[in-house]
Image (cartoon, rainbow, N blue to C red; front, side, top):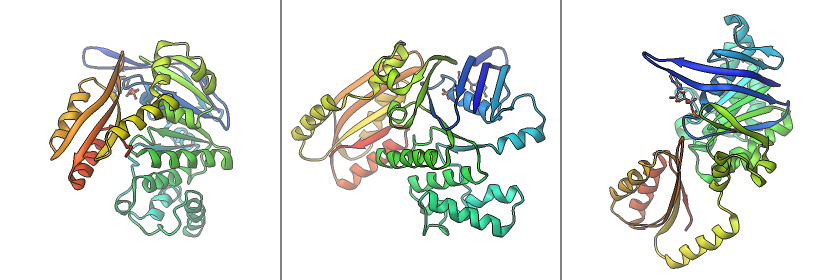
Length: 339
Ligand code: ADP
């Protein structure tokens, strides 16, 4: 379904160049859920923009559904792009349009009649579980519901491939799971090929069949997800695998933390980025009128940045505690409330 051969993308800056993607070979079969994982700056977004025809490779070729999508005319590209749907971290919905109008939008652009459009929209609303919310505006929806609209809209043109760009990174863990389950459901019902990029290994482990690990623009490891999990070869892959705490030891540790702190809330914070973000988070929490203690923290420094997990205890006025958690979540940090 997708074939990349020796794909390189070099950005020319004023007085330097950046090689964002380097000699990437990749084969993604029809019906596969294929994950691409890497830290910030690894080249994931560039790769997905190349797959979507939004960028042209400096070298190499990209085939999607047996059609070469680089070096083709604008008209051909528009046609090729109908085979590809895309969903985004921040949903990219039209705020002044209702749920059904958002989903109908690509069909309107394609020149479809109102009657045909409304039939397809109805089916899609059912598929993504948004019945009853047809007339709602995006501002009236939860994060998970917004992403459901994003998914339905991406499917409107009946694409062969769905690209997911950090599609669950802005969602809490429970909503993340429900969106991942929906993606699996769609993959099975429609036989759709799904490519997703993420920095979160649990997303890969939960739904992907294959995974490619990217570092500095290159694919450093690729394989079946279970094999990669059991036997990671590259140091970078080992770091990602370690990102998922072993359930047993983690449960025991978490239970301990919870029993030691019956009052207030124990929160697990996970972030990927710069090590500078850790003190930033603690300063953010201190802005609120809460008692705050770091119980345990671990940061692994990597070439592309850092990955950190921190268990904290927050106590105080419940409203302040909730506001602090909400604020943390806006800082690209995953905050899972454990008690
Ligand atoms: P990721 O999605 O894994 O965080 P990106 O694909 O965004 O990685 O970036 C890979 C590298 O390419 C980074 O060094 C980034 O700064 C650079 N880059 C990405 N887009 C551009 C652009 N439009 N112009 C110049 N450099 C870019």
